[in-house]
Length: 256
Image 1: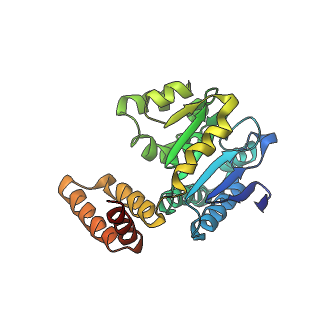
Image 2 (image 1 turned 180 degrees about the horizontal axis):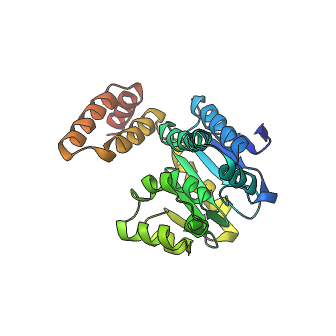
Image 3 (image 1 turned 90 degrees about the vertical axis):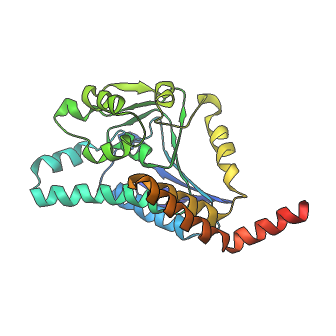
C-alpha cells in the first residue's frame, strides 16, 4: 500500500483505486491534512487511465466521524475569512468528487456522521455494512451542515432532508437505503468481498462512457427539461464519435 499522506492511504488493485481515510484512533475525523490528502489521491486516480472505479473507505471501526476537535476549536476562533477559506476547501473536495471521471464509491463501515456523512453522500455511489450509521448531528452544537444540504436535497425528499437535518438523529443503513441515501447494504461479515464484487462490474466498461455518463447526469441537475434533453443529445453525439463506442459497435455487429 502506498501512502499519499499521513492521514490518507492510496492503493491500486487492477482497475480500481482505493483511497482510505487513515486516522482510526480519531474515528477518521476530517482535518485540513486529510482533506488535502483526499484531493491529491482523487486527482492521482483520475489521471490514471487504467482506473475504472475508486473506492473511498476508512480504517478501523468507522468511516468518518466528521470534523475533529482541533478543527472545531479552529472554527470557533477563526475570522470570517479564515472560516470561509476552510469551508471552501471542503467544497472543493465535494466538487472534485463529481469532476473525477470514473465512479467514486463510498464503502461505509460503522459511523458516517456530520462531515463524514456528507463525504459519503458526495460520492457517486454508497455501499454500507449492515451495522453502519448515518447522521447529521450538527444542529446539536449550533452548527449548520449547509454545503451538505446541496447533496442531501438531491438524494431525498424535502421532508426527509429536513427531518435528518433538524433532529440530528442517526439512522441505520437499512433506513438510509430505503430513503434513497445509499445504494446497497451488505452483511458486515462479507462486506469487503461484496464491495469488491460490486466494483468489478466497472472493470470491463469504457472509461470514456463512464466519464460522459457521469458528467451528463450531473450536468442535468439544474437544467429545465428541454435543456436537459439538449445536453443529452450533445453527449450522445460525442459518445458516438469516441473510439470506445465505435469499437464496441463493431464487436456487437460481429457477434450478430
